[in-house]
Length: 362
Length: 260
Image (cartoon, rainbow over the protein chains, first blue to last red):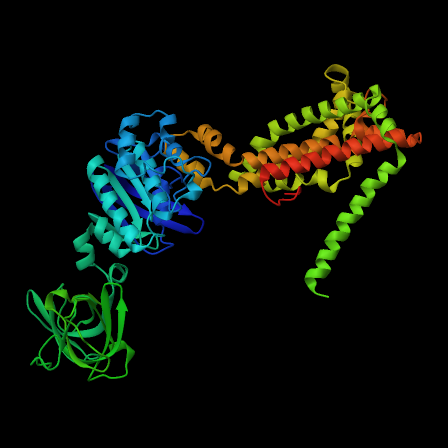
């Protein structure tokens, strides 16, 4: 288990403050955030490669804050992988065997690892002659071969195409389960975070904005900043009309529509921002006997349609507020073979499910 | 005329210019005379002395240059920029001036005491080594530092997380990765030491069969109008220089120039 307590790090004018994380054995904790927010700084400090201003780092019950990197028993895979170009694949993987530490894997275990990662046919190749995916697997094998129970990964799959990435996520999950590893992974890729994480911490400008189970982070972000990092949201200014103990009724003048939503602790008359994920909004054809005058339904016209990988993205313009960019509604809908058939200019109704609307005070 | 043709013409001119200079040497000497001077006791002594002194000077400078270059490349410390600046000293100050500075050093009270009680340098074999060492140390550090600069510290950092201590990371990762740069630095420093003249003659003088390195021997032969002898020694120096350049290019494996 890896724990950090109030870690403060500074690098030039940039500082990372009060980073408290916990990565239980066999779980994956993802640090999610854009570039330049201090993610790599945190990993390097935990690995012992960068000095910290204050705070503690614990591995199980041992305080390793002042230990040298080689004594921390933490494996680190940097973004560029740092595979040794003067050694072949086999020597890279067996590199840690030269420096016997407690818990190091036996040669037999490493050979098994090589089989698991499908590296047996490239053992004598030089690093320069490997593909991107092969390099990633070698870097993981080299890190696993140490026998360390804690693994730090700095955007290891960012340079790979989706199919390769997806295969490596599977492989990493399998290895994590097999070796019961604590993984701290840094990424800006929402899909990667969603696939691998048990727990997510959202990082912005050197501070953790929210930390929790991935479902909580993705479906209940505690601030607009977190929601912007964790998904594609639509944001609309609105005013609270009335509240009950659990629900609230808000009116959005931009969309000229009233919405029922969960009450996050607001009162009538409050100015709020209403946020909804683009893939939580449904789209209904106008001729399907739906009444657009009901709550949570906005009558619109399709302005643009984008084909994005496995989904279609729609930009809708509400009928009652045409022309304003603030009123555009973005919707992502998974492509389902033979079901959809929308076209630009088509009249539709967008439906905002009650449970999916998030309310933030302005 | 295109830019391509003009620029190629200038490079061909350079090649022909140096070729004419080299071949002009051989109009002064016959083959038999060349061999007899080449294998004469005095010439062999000059070759042996030059090789021995240059090799010792390079070894000493390497022992200092390797850790110094690593420190300058990897660490931030007080005075680093001044050290980095002074490395250029042997390149901007004439070797004769450097030699004179060494002579002045040994003329001070401390220098005289050192020569009387520890080791005599002026007009000795050790003086040759010191003169060559002085002229090549800065250059050797600069070349090895450039080699370390090209290697990302991430390799060493990763080695540390894989269980290597700082010395092990240096020995197993940085040193092999910097191997070509180090080897070419050593070879070029050796070639520079072999050809060193200004500082050597100022510190060690011109004593036949005692402090007579190849460049000093050329000077001595020219001063008594021994053209044949000078041609043979110049040819030897040329051969050494060209062989060294060839070896360095093979080691580096590209078009890298000697200055790199």
